[in-house]
Image (cartoon, rainbow, N blue to C red; front, side, top):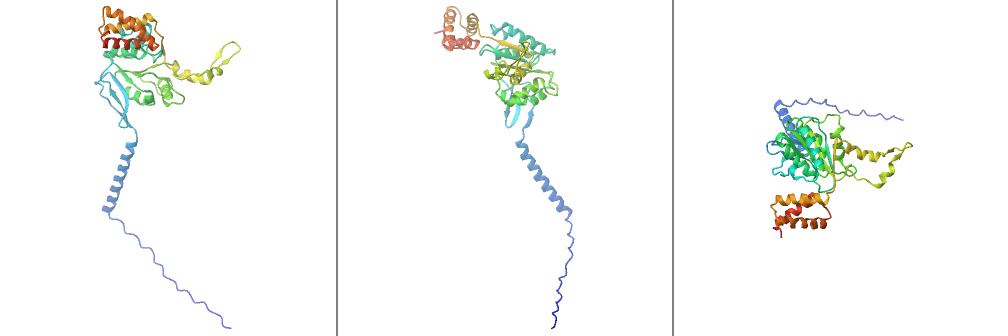
Length: 316
């Protein structure tokens, strides 16, 4: 039986790849130029998403500035109209005034001085004392930078901006208090005393608060205290953490509620400042007590508010 013979398969000749011709130098340069253009466009878009460095302010515009965010960038905005309050307007807080005035004088003279925490009752003149200090020492080179609590995270950047200036700066945060986990808390601790870098010699922090430890305190935290055999009491870790921030302020200044006599003295001072004299003054002093009773407070703020109201309605 004849055997079948396989036919040889036809082979298709393979062609070796032809080398591609090199691009002309002009085309290559055009491609690179287009690539650079796209890269620059992408970088420009990214820069709009990133915070811009703080702009240099007009230092001659004012002696007080606010650290604000405007147009996506942080900057110092000059305060055009300042509070005219002076030390002589602060009545009933002679000891508190003496401490802050002495510390501020040391600071503007280039001597060692402390960060200041001013705490106590509302309306007793805590922030007014800081403003009066600026008015007292502005001619000696003192400047005030007001920073809101939400912007305290920018303190390292702000102190770096101020460090090269010849003026002396008080970074002021009014009515300061923190809740658990707020980022400004750790930033303030670091700037006060805790960063690897040294604090600028021409910057101090003055803060006012109704809380001595700047954070809320609960009854439950009393249970964390440890009573030792020798009678000593050691606070728990949570309490220690809250105390650690206020302890970084070298000077504590406490304010207390005014007595009735002090309240009347403050009311009389502001009544005179608004032009109330003579028999009107005697009548106004009695009305000022009713005003304080209705508000449940005998504070300097309440006395000032009464004087404005009384003078505004012509003593009627």
